[in-house]
Length: 224
Image 1 (cartoon, helix red, strand yellow):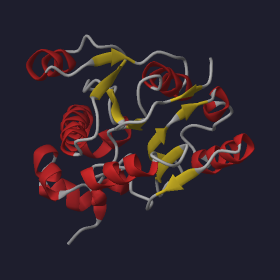
Image 2: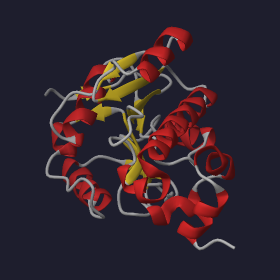
Image 3: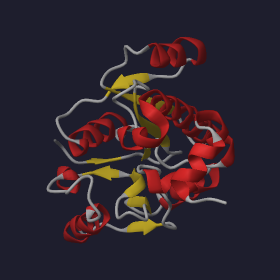
């Protein structure tokens, strides 16, 4: 994969999302939400992050779908909202992210986000976009050791290689790669992902009401 340096201009926003399929999406929350409730949460999280990406008014917003673009939820977003939808391609998360950057970075800097951080705001995206005007990369780390946003002005395949995806060492290893490449980067505040039952306390109230009865959520989080 060649190296790229994006031209000047507003950053695009790529959203990585799984199809809201029971048994595929947010499976670690199924013990509380059930497989259908977990899929319903995935749908709401995806809609929320897409609204956030559009509200940032940066550059083009695109959706990168897994396992492919055929699910009716993705088809509706494409047909009704005109949202560009692409299939995630690659055997690992790193390969899939690198492929998305490879497609976009010849045109403009790109911010890549998932759907697991409902507290990510348009202001967060704008701050990362501003950082990319002078920095090679921008991140919002996750409190679990990963990151909820990665933004790049340039691409090098080493940035996504030998990363222990799904562990608490993702951001640490990424910083090591950045140092070896001699790149400049910016980091914002660390934010919460919503991946496990214990993370449900960070789910905004409006999403709680959408996906789970209050009594079940309080039992899961110990809320009073």
